[in-house]
Length: 212
Image (tube, rainbow, N blue to C red; front, side, top):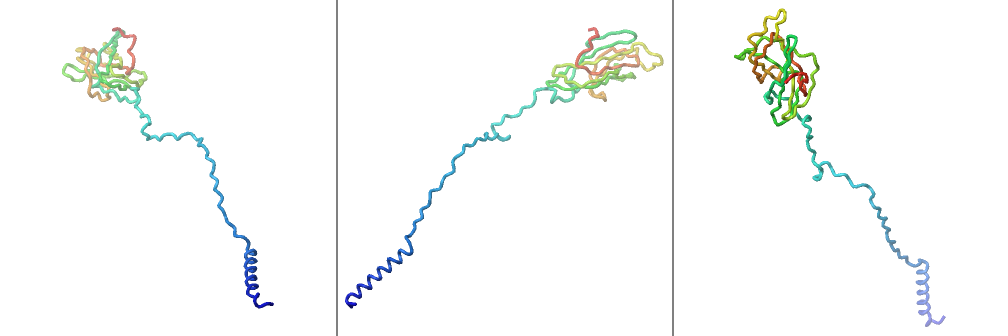
């Protein structure tokens, strides 16, 4: 070998070795991120949510205009009274009494009124007042409306009756919607009750058989 060509041969061998090593390792790979796919937009087909009960645009609830839904019990002091008719026969006298609701609100009544017969000084007569054997119903009396009842008085003393004030007759009849007779209205007599009386239930209509 020519010694002068040795350096060149060595350099060439180094280049060949370098190229062979690069080929063995293979070319460098470049990784490119693939673009992400966006999910398709789906329109919301569900109905809109109902507004909550406390929403400001929620319509307000108003009280019922039906007077019977909120009416209380009628007070005697809210009533005025008048005799609207009467009839007589077979030792008895029938009278019809109308009670008018003078207040500005409706109220309810039921049952029987409490009656007391008194003399001119307000002293009670000993008159037994019985309830008619009729079923009483509860009903509403509108403002300015009326409730009615009847009174049956025996004007001839029955056998054994000693406490009845046939003469002089009672100067007044006290009418109360309370069972204890409190706050009574007074209908000035005379009321000739011979020891007994019968009161009918409160009704929404007057007794048709009574003469005015």
